[in-house]
Length: 428
Ligand SMILES: *Cc1c(COP(=O)(O)O)cnc(C)c1O
Image 1 (tube, rainbow, N blue to C red):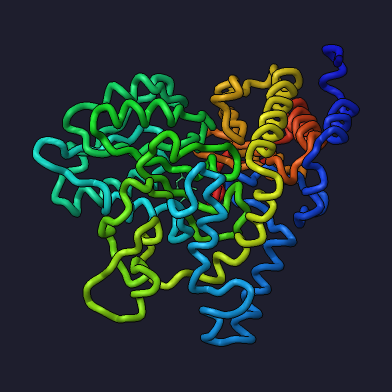
Image 2 (cartoon, helix red, strand yellow):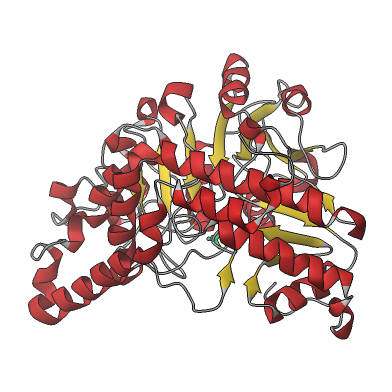
């Protein structure tokens, strides 16, 4: 048993690392020397396996030319489907319900174009006022395309404190004039995990379709989308899944919706064996593959092949367990070491409501982030005053968490942040 004080020491952090059953995965990644990378929820690091599969696909182009579509270790023509099958366990879907395609934003457009069917007085879409901007922009433009005014038809569920959402508040917005609901699984700022099961049940009871943006939960927390009956979901693969900058994203469509014509069709929406018949009548694929549009971005999906292998080996349950340990340790250290410096922790503290990152607010956040970078700690600044810190299960250590908090304490105690301007960079 640890005594109170022992729980905050470097020795204790090292002890946690020794007991860590995922510790061996750190050496699978390119860890930038001297740096403590806490930004894996914005852009995950490159792994050796991801590099290997990227090089293998380059090589298949080199060796096969156009025949790479059907030959080589990973024939390009089937890659979106085979990767979809591999991703399915991460979202709790059957293998045909997931396809690797598009980006978060383009997949959201596709899914809303496909599933938003305003009829009679049911013409509204519910989102939330803390949503990531791209989701809101996409919903506004989808409404405009249907000749509906976003001011009237996009309803944003309110947050009482500007950081967290209450499921009850969202459920209250599930009124008779609502056709569709789009919500995040994990909020990108406060890291709150929404109760997707409950929200789905309540939406379905009222005849409303519901879709989730999984950007901050995919590869970090388990999901049971099929069991919960979620209608659809979409996500990116460059955050916790380490698929590389601009990696191809993914989507899930519940099997009860198979066989529809996709809202934004293209020849890759076709049933595979029909695609090259070149008919002008689309025969849509009878699974999530129907929501693809054009030729897959083969080189931008290649690293995901290698990266997903590790998630398969380890399993999402173990990743979640370590992630919770890491964030809990960080919260304990922050409460102990920097309590006098004006930080406000915005995460829900309960395990089941806490996603994979810590979100701190401070009025000097922009320059504190710059000072952390000078100390070789890589955080994520979120305007106007947020600091996101994501210790991730596959490559961060408890020792790194300990060191980061010590560095933060030094920065605050010595007011080192004052030598920087309190302004964000172009990419923050
Ligand atoms: C990262 C993120 C996105 C990014 O969308 P892209 O189309 O990949 O640029 C969208 N939504 C949320 C909630 C995100 O966290």
